[in-house]
Length: 145
Image (tube, rainbow, N blue to C red; front, top):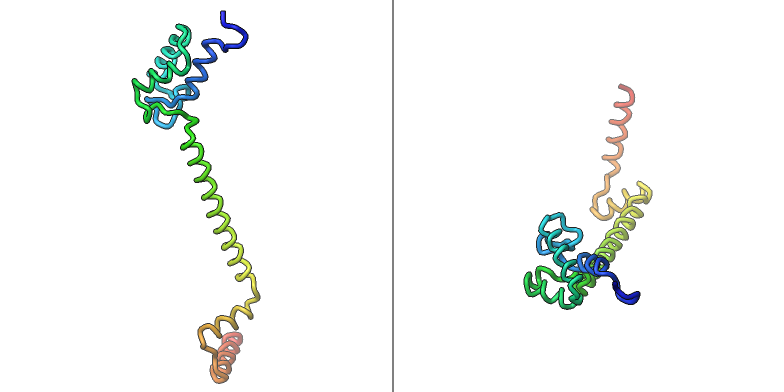
């Protein structure tokens, strides 16, 4: 019977299955893999724990069998910090685009007359008095129709 200080073989094998990446389902732990081979691997880990092997011995044997790249660990610092860095970069880029979007909304909400004046100055084209009179006459003609 295990002592009160050491966890049961079932607990240790479950922890290992949740910690180690599955060689059968890329990107998933052994416990979360849906492959029947992963269930057999869980049983194998449970048997090794029950036989008295330590966590380190079991990990070393599995890494020797499947390779560190394949088995890895879900708590690999590179994966954890890489994910956090990617999330931070995404947040900064998102904040940048939201800020630009809001700034463009502020410009768009300016008065139409102000925009028209800005546009006329920017394009250096303003209607002449003759053109304005002609436009006014045409609008009157359309209204009378």
